[in-house]
Image (cartoon, rainbow, N blue to C red; front, side):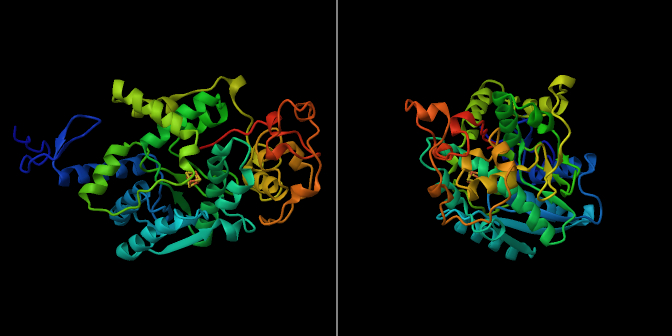
Length: 378
Ligand code: SF4
């Protein structure tokens, strides 16, 4: 059966049916519609005002590649200037190749590019060093928890470095729906309350950040890259298979098979979610060390780095943070092992010998990992 005619231009043959509406479009009309929808998202949400200097979080992957390309097309109409900011997490065999993809995109599109590295920002810590530090406890999926916190901070630092007024990231509707599911599965009211918001206005000293692709499905992002012949890096991070997000992704795929609108329905549900007053988290304060937004004395990034530098990586997030917050900061040095001079964990679970502590708990001055409530963010 011949392909139907494009329902927009009525001239070319349709190349696809839009997953969200079933509308038959040719490649050219699909791309124009996709760009118009992103423009609408930005304008309706007042996300990027004229004159904004926008740091685009660039990873070389499909989402950030499509985001940078679309914003480059829209930049003259929006009156914004773009600067790509890439983060080198220090993940051997993965990030080097992805950064090459970002560099070639920047050269092709004539956009300025700045690369910031964990090792430079965080006292020598790379993600590979963090993974080694947290290994052996059977909870290696926490790599993405650490990386998510540090990436956010690194992107903020990179954006400031280039004089940006706003940050944009390439999260699409599927990413957002996965995040909503994860937050429900964890009962994380604080994150649920923020889950559907298109962006943050820049509370505290943080720059405003937003997600212009939040209502674009992953399938349509891939289709846009295909029709615009965009080249991107598509290998998976070596730590991704361990992430809790993978369970939410699998669940979402099954939900979508039964109900095609499940992804956008979840995103819109989170937008409209209202928490009962008793469930609302207290308003955030500021980190006593760096001034970033924080719901405790220390922000997540400062607490996490403190935990790593003390050889207590698992105490960095959750109740164990109290242990860290009472102490002055240590400078970063991932090659040293501050744990070596400390004694065994004093908690009952380690003393009775029935349950071994994780590596974060084998320390006399802290509770063991079994008593902390490290909760993965990715
Ligand atoms: Fe970082 Fe996890 Fe993403 Fe890898 S998969 S870059 S460790 S957040």
